Length: 100
Image 1 (cartoon, rainbow, N blue to C red):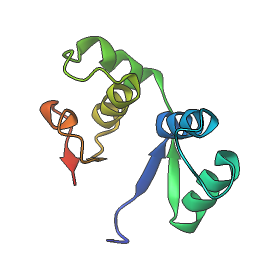
Image 2 (spheres, one colour):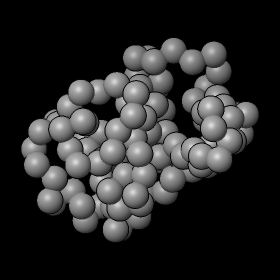
Image 3 (cartoon, one colour):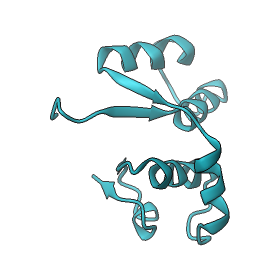
């Protein structure tokens, strides 16, 4: 809600949302490739690319969370000094900051 905060949607999340939409495990009012970018524009959410620096964090993560998408989001938060917005209790067990 604070306009001073920058908001990002990880390409990892966009990938996961699109995969779930394609597998018919996620309903969206329009195709993922138009809905997700449209919502990002509407809410002024920037894309967070996946960079090598984030990937290298993966080898040092404890095996707490089994979801590869969530593990990569944790790596991105660590690499970029970002806060993850998630209600997932497993993510809270890592050293990345989490709000929700």
